[in-house]
Image 1: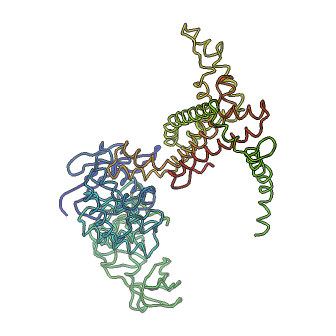
Image 2: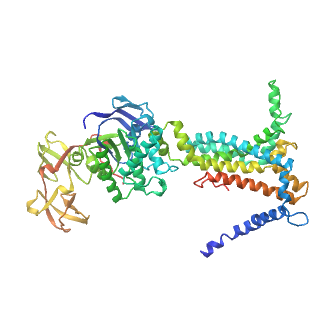
Image 3: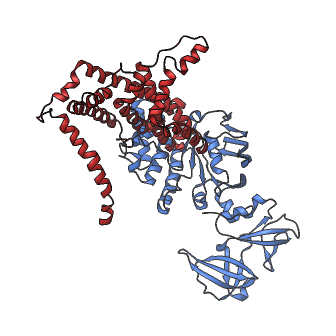
Amino acid sequence: MSNKLIDIQDITKSYDGTIVLDKLNLYIRENEFLTLLGPSGCGKTTLLRILGGFETPDSGNIIFDGKNINQLPPNRRQLNTVFQKYALFSHMSIAENIAFGLKIKKKSKAYIQDKIRYALKLVNLEGYEERFADSLSGGQQQRIAIARAIVNEPKVLLLDEPLGALDLKLRQDMQYELIRLKNELGITFIYVTHDQEEALTMSDTIVVMNQGYIQQIGTPEDIYNEPQNAFVADFIGDSNILPATMVQDKVVKMLGSVWKCVDVGFGRGTPVDAVIRPEDIDLVKPEEGTIEGVVTHLIFKGVHYEMEVLANNYELLVHSTDMVPVGTEVGIKVDPFDIQIMKKPESEDEEAVGIEE
Amino acid sequence: MKSRKLLTGPYLFWSVSFVIIPLFMIVYYGLTDKEGGFTLLNLARITTPENLKALGLSLLLSLGSTLICLLLAYPLAMILAEKKVRQSSFIVLIFILPMWMNFLLRTLAWQNLLEKNGVLNNILHFFHLPSLTIINTPYAIILGMVYNFLPFMVLPIYNVLVKIDRDVIFAARDLGANTIQTFTKIIFPLSLPGIISGITMVFVPSLTTFVISDLLGGSKILLIGNVIEQEFKQGSNWNTGSGLSLVLMIFIIASMALIAKYDKDGEGNAF
């Protein structure tokens, strides 16, 4: 997990005058599972295609293993791609699909046979050699696409929303499968998705992107617990984003009351945004809370109840395993380390945007 | 469901009266002599030296023109498939446009162009170049076939090429194939259904034509189509004409079956 394998320097790309990536800088370490996460149109797929060699950046450099690969055609890059819609070769059997890259590299027949067997075993599809892609389910096709890529022993595997077309159960199974593959193969994964849950589950590092800019880079825990701006807070999971003012270090004023927090260095009287995750709000007896409120909505979600609590004219989203009936007057308590203070957005592209699902 | 079935009525009536009955009549005439007795002589007439020569020349010319059409059409279809939809539909339109003009008129125009004192030779004469004798040669017939049937080769190939997912081509490149390997291993095999239906749509009309050879080949060059035409019109010998037609049909069915063997997906079913 140490040295930089890919260094993306100042990559800019625009289509017909619309800027998709704007002077983007990012490095990817060896053996990392890095996820590019963002809403559609944020530039994540474009970045992946530039890495794969299917798009040329307008400016900037891609340094791979110390060498500039800007001009290198896709067939000479040491990485392989798993495409969103699998892109299997429909006129070839599964075995021929998997053997494609190896045959091009003129490997021996015995070697290719070994590899096909090994790859099919790895993706749990032994005995599918002679089948054709159109007789396989979406999940099976996806696994064949992965097998076809990894037999070439790439240094980096690029995955473009590979689980996007699968149903929930299969998607979760495949997530574990991918983590297992990554650990077994020890190669670097660059994964593109708009599904924040998928990103949190699998990644070592998450890169949150919006409108061609990187919003935050960090571990899943960092991204979830310490979102740096309202966009990240809103995109990753549910959150309450509240306008607030710093009274002093570790003290913030919001919802008409003064709260203890753990953030420092914003300066006295600075307007900020405060993020509180719905599961971090404790509903207590009215006299025990920092402020009071009334439960206005209640929905059963399976694992937890989702409630809306009206307090000081703000609707707070609360997740709890305990049910509180609508109309109950409650006290609201939040632990200091569960209040995350962020600077107010300075530019438009940092603002929280609606997420189309 | 019952009312749905009724909808096939007009088509059934059509195909019975104008396809099936005439076909049986051809078979009947082909297998009988003038007195109505059963005979295979009409079929055997194909073995006369003149008729064999006509059949051979027909096969040669239609194979030649099919091949030329393929060589012209494939690169064009590839270029079209690369273009954006608006650009390519314009070029496709240019290609189809001549097809909206009468087939005979177009062929007559070629006759005018290629004549001894025609437009082409006038231009050559103007530049003090030796004149060409193309009219009334097999070359003129091939030219006429290629000119008339080329769009039928371009369109089916174009149609399969645009349907190939760009990611499939990217995937081949990604797995290490260079542009030539991507073409030979991926693009070409995936476009086979289009090639096959293009070949069918050019080869069959080329093999049976008698108008093109009439107009551009003069009376000297007889194709099997001309022979059959003469049996019906000049010889008034329906029995021999039908017999030869049957033989030609067998040839077409055989060649289509041969092609279909290589068409696994069954997409190129033009017949």
